[in-house]
Image 1 (tube, rainbow, N blue to C red):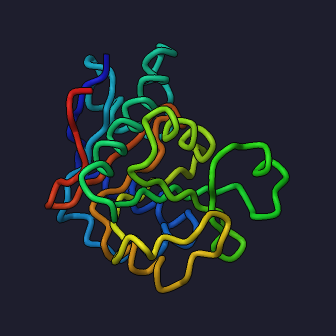
Image 2 (image 1 turned 120 degrees about the vertical axis):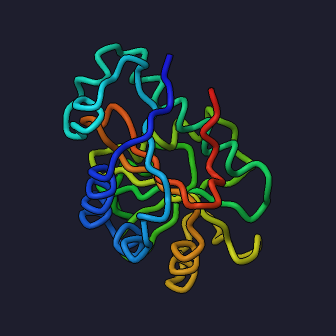
Amino acid sequence: MLVWKALGPNALAYLRECLGGGRSLSRILLVHDLSRGSVLARVPPLADEPALSDFASGNLFVDAQDERGSVTSLAISIVEYLRPAANRICVLECYPHRPTDPALQAHDFNWNPFGDEVYVLLDRALNSSEVEQSIYFAQTWAFLACLSSLPGVSEKPSPFHEIPSELMAAIAARTEGMVVGAYDSSGFVYWTGNSNQMSCSGH
């Protein structure tokens, strides 16, 4: 069982560090005033402050079931965010992949290039199992999930087509939540804007 716990100011510094080391979307998101949102993690109930703040260590998730539950919980939160509106989107930044990578052909889901970078665009047509598979594909030490919305539903690019620069900028500007990898890739740090659109339910 995992529970939500609020994180202190050092989590904002960690979030900024992650964004600064990411790809194009991460770096664009750095312009957000992150101090106007809330930072949380979904962790084992007995996690104490020193462990919560040790973002590089995987010791917080000593139970493999908790680690698996961390990904499942993120997938459910993403699905619950996407469900209410057709123009909502979750963008996964696939840090290590390139459009020419042979590994991309072995995975049964859609992706989009942005220059020499790869992104997975999730919408409300997907169930939590499909979202979970996409998370595992994108999950690295530099994992980023951006929860935002499109200016219009029709503006989502077709699978395998280039994401226009202006659309990437619009997605970043409309961001309501973001998630980065933490705890030695065993868990995640969540940031939600003041609108608190991202679900922090008890799932």
